[in-house]
Length: 468
Image (cartoon, rainbow, N blue to C red; front, top):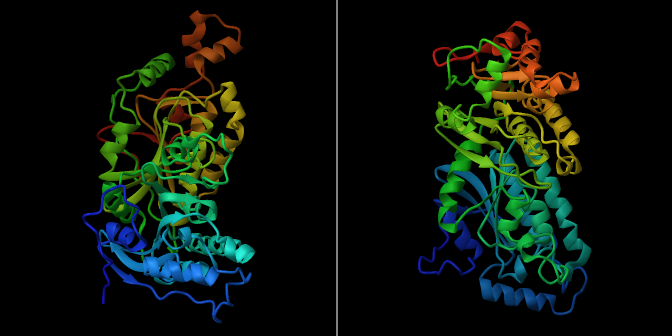
């Protein structure tokens, strides 16, 4: 029998939802899960004997109708089954204690046993100080459970509500595969009462965390349900772990010119032409629909790198697409994050290569450009799922090669790939500007040159696509 939590249709948008209202807002149906238990009843006033703790918990029960700060349910969202947990902020600030840990462990375990994605609707002030280190240690417990679900190839999606601070953010929130935040939600490891008095409040907001690459999207409350439905359609599965790699992503058709360039410099000109189809055009032609992840969970975002998961012919394919700009360290780290997530979920990957090269300014160096590029190379080299790569424009040195799957690279007729830009090669060789065109020919950078050199597997056009 399904228990649908009550929905308060008259509640104003600014009102903080209860845990059950939050579940009702995003699910079709929901059945309460049996809470986990630690066994023996807790001692009077908890493990520390904190005077008044039992009375505080009773007041929280009376006020909220809940007996703990987390509610868990087996639910359907857009027809996809998932385990959903929601924090009740009205119960001691949604804080984590030992019994909270019991419930969270039970929810993760149910997700593994049923092979379901786990959706967390988080609103918490952190660990419960009345239980001291016994409460703080629940973060290790949650992290351990999350690791088990990751190892099982099960996705975890977090919805960060207001507020989400402390250990709840540092485990269930920031540790999820996909992080969606509600507008203006307070998000940060430090709560409002413990952060420096002169701290910039924007840094602790959903919008600030998005700009810093810590959350994937800021989603209005009225769009959250449909967004979760799309993500679960892309990532949710009850299938057992595959015993063999999935079929590779098919190579996209070329969208630009069908004629091959006559000279190396002609190839450069075509790839740099502003009218040439870019990543956006290829994604739209290739996928029925898609959702994107954003940010490197470290230092920021690179608008020149598009990463996410899309539907094509009834199956999910992950993608990492360069957009024709110099790729920044955050872009490489986001692509690496995408490749490793797809590898863990058993999803084939498509990469679109198009960059004049890696960003080489001082800020990029300070942000760890070399290490970021190295990690992308490593992610592609070690992926167990098949990776298909298509060169759709400029292939500028190592910054482009980092997104090109070894031995699985195709090229469009309006692309080129070079160890270095012809202008820079001429400068290094101390040649004048009038020798740049000749240098481009010497580098053998045209698509047909790349095919002869064994760098690419084939050249695609609108009538002929590469094999899978």
